[in-house]
Image (cartoon, rainbow, N blue to C red; front, side, top):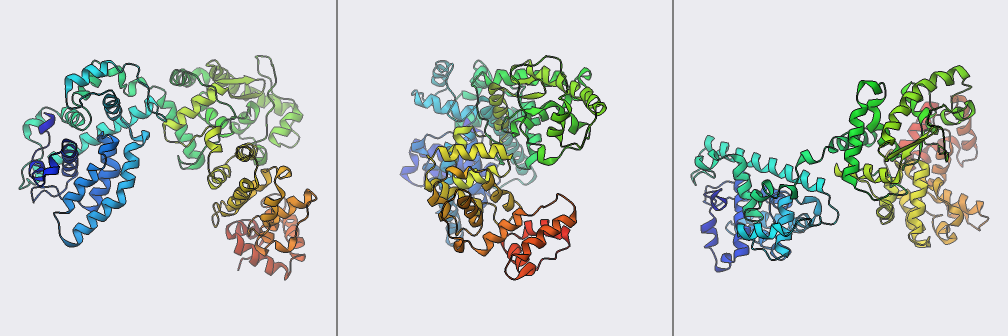
Length: 595
């Protein structure tokens, strides 16, 4: 069936066009290209599916990397087939198709080699070829497949990744086949049907499997669905993906974008990550039972919020206070929580001075503490059930992820497409990449990661200069610019090479910060080099934004304006020109109108 699933694609006439088209590798590429173009609705009035720029782009960067295995030395055949099709046209159409093929070819090659695009069928086809299998011989494929038991996964991929891509490919191919059949039934093409009634009667699933065999390895789909199903597990083998979905929801609530990076943990302990994840989802599902109310359903949030803190410990009392709608000072949300070496199993709320430190609550009483302790005990019971997995710990009021638990949560986030680097990956980022990420992290975590980034480059002047420049350019002109340049405050400039700080004096954003750092170190620095924009931003960032009464905040602005050349109007103009978003946020509540 694999040879005849898609009929009337014009394959024979196309291959008759030139002797080189009879090369088996080229013919295989032509069969896939023509078949996919036809499946996607390309006009076949001339006997061949006619590519359009949109179809060409989709074919090269989406469809072929999803459905087709091609060894590296045969990748060039696929753009070549499209080029040969384009050559059948004249004028503008030919030029447009040729241009899209040339423009998309690098993306096509990257997508075909990207481990993130592998399905079980594409991966096993590549493994079978490396051991010399004849991918057109079902018996040889079966025999060689038996010898691959326990074969490793490609670098950068996990079983859940391949399972997810395979499930998606199955859906996409079945949908394309169904739509093609309906389309031809509603408007029968002159070239004849793409799918015969007899073929469709056997089932869309069988047709999709036959095409997968044709485009990867003969007989592979049947083997992976039957005797070697353990080689290609489906969704039922990954119950923990339910937890991965919940963690993705948490991440989207925080950041709105799966690509927004979460901080790397300081330490990750390798373990049987899938088994550990299954253990964690069993605990999470148990916590959803009535006996763990009212906080049992918060388990995914608790796991995410600790990971988002760079896996620094969190306070049971502080989280319970948030759930009980106590006022918690936002400036204290990321405050470090000490982890005792040992503590009684039974939970006890911290003493009043520690509660004040953690919450910023003014003068709580022992009655307040007792009331909070009841809620915190309920929350501690949830954490203790999670801790039974060995992936979470609670000691006294502190809770967090163990190094092994950090690895599991990182895996679950990455499975759902969240950017979750480890320490080595974050250290390998460029300066703009690490600055863009760190701006959304707690200050203590950003300080650790940026210090590690500089240390990985031996704290050279070039590394410091690149990082300082990124503070002024990343997110420039956006509402995030202030938070980005605010990262200067978490840098340990005491050990920075003086030439890097002096080189930053003329930076239009962080020049005044560099001047202040040099002065604190007693280093010579020329303040004349600092630009007005950098001085205005330094003043702006030093103003109290939303803290304290308006009168005192206005007084702070007036005091700064008194020392600014040209007074308050000139200062406001300079601030607005340098960062209008932050200037509006800080000055409008004070009744100051921007120019």
